[in-house]
Picture 1: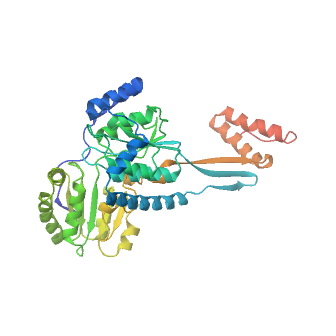
Picture 2: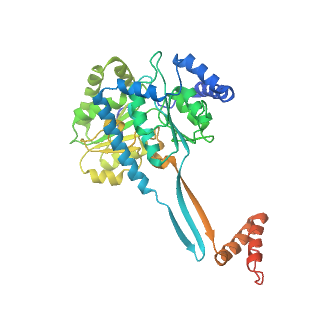
Picture 3: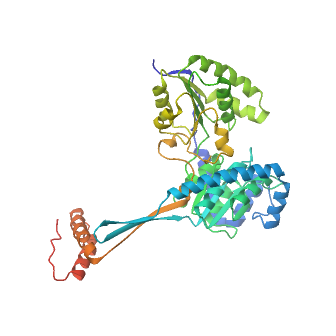
Length: 433
């Protein structure tokens, strides 16, 4: 049976970005040339905020005092899980040296970035978890200066829970500034801050475009599009849980794709009937987002067997991939393209989004074909070094000279020649290819 679409998307999540690109480029140019004053002007215009940009210890304490005790404990729990997982990731990065040939030593070092800029969304939703995910991993990596910025609300400033989360996660500087101006402030080193070596964290299309434009001048975690999620479910899956999980991810935004891939038509039909009912029961903002995402971007795909299901999933390369099917070990070994994998009914993307420990900053729009998500590794530079004895350098120099001359790179060849003549003045060498 060929793959059958029981529900087909009418839109794609990739939209014309020309207008957004032009606006963001103008803002970045203004802020780069105008510095602090330009950034403050945009903050006043777009965020309707004129308070202090850099939060001092008193402001952090005042915010902490506003966070209920239970929420503080929940944030601490999530932070602990993320930190533990990040520490294991850090342990997987090894420094070494090896003698690749007699007298020729090469090695690897793992060096953290000096300064990281973490963007924490705070507009439509206050992304407490994003502060935990981005700052904690930078702290575990050993970044010297971690900046976290989040859009303030008029007369209120940054959400207290975001301030608290970023602070306990290890941020050295907290900024009440969002959008392009916040990204630019961290990149250009405004307000007395160091210039960021890398920018990380989710954001709206303007934040994502700013990161895309700045990439090269500064590192970024990844090019980000709307969040997406795919569920692989067989006939043993609980249709109610599948439907709830789809809705939970569709509420991210009007253009957040969700997919159900199954080999059981009855399950698919039950889920398709149930999803609109679940969406109708959401609060208004969440309902509007989920309804649009389900209507315009969602797909339900019927396959003949699990191998075909896995193929569809790998071709889609979703940000979040959930398996609610028999033989989870088979799926773990078979699936290849995803940002983060959730195996079994007992876990869910929402756990990963908030508190389970794996990072929720993940590749979207099919980027999971070639990259994973945010991790300690993103903040680390894996660099190499070499040294040699004079005897050990001789065969390297000879090979280098001949290869270089064959390539037409005489200067490279002479850099090898001069060492051979210095170290072995009485020896004759054939240095032409």
